[in-house]
Image 1 (cartoon, rainbow, N blue to C red):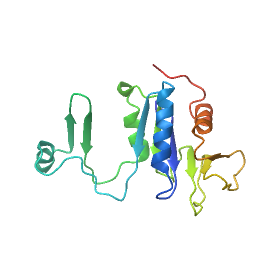
Image 2: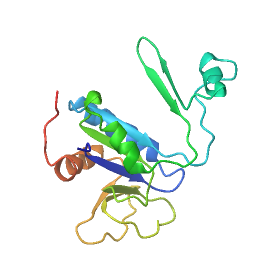
Image 3: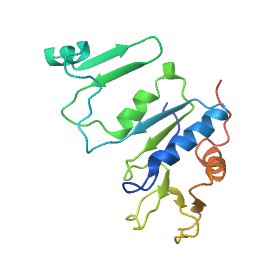
Length: 173
């Protein structure tokens, strides 16, 4: 079974990472175990520096490299075809991770429920929009029951996430 997830979407430099960080911090304060998934299709991601043991493992042909330390681990996987968001969410839903919710940054065309950050330009029509988060004083036209929140109203957004994404389910720990 997949862990409940929602996405924070918007164009570049609209504050997605800032909002994701604030939502994760507040959900964590409330006792929820939170995982995140960020889409970065524009960069060549590298966790290992040239000359490190993990880089040598990859160069030797390892498709997956796990670097484990005392307090954290990094799993690096190479692939020819980018996995789908659903595949990533299923990996993060592994029961061994004990997550209550996954916050996704990006993947605006996914089917996930979305909080849409608006900047100077409006996004194209998106599906499954839970809420728009806007700068103070800028009110877009919301469709149907879609909420409009000030992007600084973390408590309001959290209340909406608890009700609509987590269905008021308490933290698992």
